[in-house]
Image 1 (tube, rainbow, N blue to C red):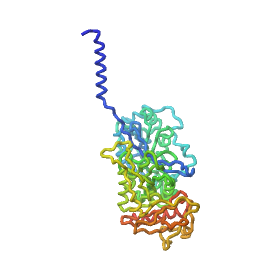
Image 2 (cartoon, one colour):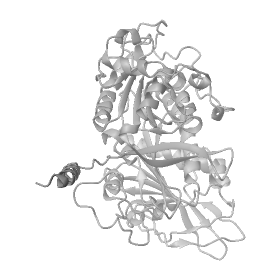
Image 3 (cartoon, rainbow, N blue to C red):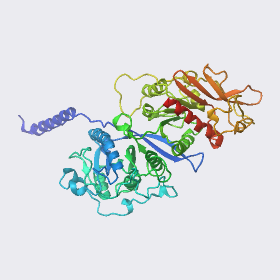
Image 4 (tube, rainbow, N blue to C red):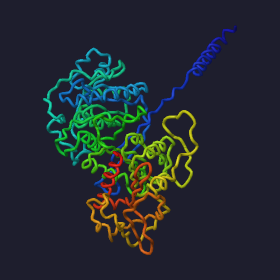
Length: 543
């Protein structure tokens, strides 16, 4: 061999080896996690009001962490200890699935870290601790909370037991039902956890544990700190609890106290998610939470239902002893993701479905949840655009675009249910009369003056009254023989139209009203008949 050619031959061999090595390596694609964030933002209709909205984000699990706050083996409050024990197995399953995806799990049982001094998971936090600290790790209220009213009185410590427990600090470690892996981290220090997150490149943080109104929001590693650090933080709202005594203001059930705290956090601190985003199963609910569940299904772009219905739900929480949850679509009519409604799994547990949706087609699995609910015979309350809720007036291609590739055959088109108006509501929506110079004049149908749906409302409150200037729907003639019309409306030179009725279906009662404009919700008598409708239908659900 010519010695001059040897270096060239060696170089060719090296290139060949690198080429083969590159061919043998498979590019690893990150499986993004689809997260459905619920939050409340200022309304563009009323600066003093808030809208509930949903935002879908794709999270890289390698850039995501879960922090488990103060899930102690024992609390000074017996009731709190029992609820922690009930929640822990579901929490353990959730973090186990997240861990498998590559999410970092941080266990933060405050005051108990010495118990874990020799555990391998204790080392990461100590190693990357941020030595210089400032107000970042304070539990003080955020600027966004200025002027906000704390939703519950926790001044007595929050024990809801019939005989109040003696306060103290009996906890020694995290409850054993939640497993700690060697690759997890253990710390109750905000500066340690922040340093660890910086080192690991963590951008997204989920807080779960107890108690939302105390430690979860205010610890040095809590929600407020994560917001101050600029991290994309959320509360997993179904895997948390409050310290709230139902004998204290606002004198609602302990579990309604949970709901009110979640509302506060979504409005002033950060969004919330549910464990379903990780487990694919229905969200957790405490066994003693016996409140009827009202599921609000909202997806429309004309009447600000994502403002008016959450405000209505808040009043229901405070006055009716019910639980309220939301399945939300985008409040627009065109654009990416418009034909999608998140959180519909709540229908599996719902006692009443309230529908305010306009012209949406849905993936088959979402439409199935709605149809299964209706076919179960449970009650439905339809508001205004519910008459054309699932009729998009055109074929809608299934463009995909999901964050997780589905297995199996994907339908070419999204599902619609144009018969929902006829078969469920009993209506016959063909359009509306358009804007007029005068409003609609309402009349109570003769003989219906003393109907339970008009409880607290004088017939004179409606007869001859005029609504704000919005359109009257054309629904005549109705298409069910089992309908009882309670209220009709007229505009000049047109026949009266039914605007409020009950459809006594073979499978469950349905109430529908073509009212529901944002101005209607300002009218006390309209809100009263909506409260009456919820009462009436929930009694039906129990029977």
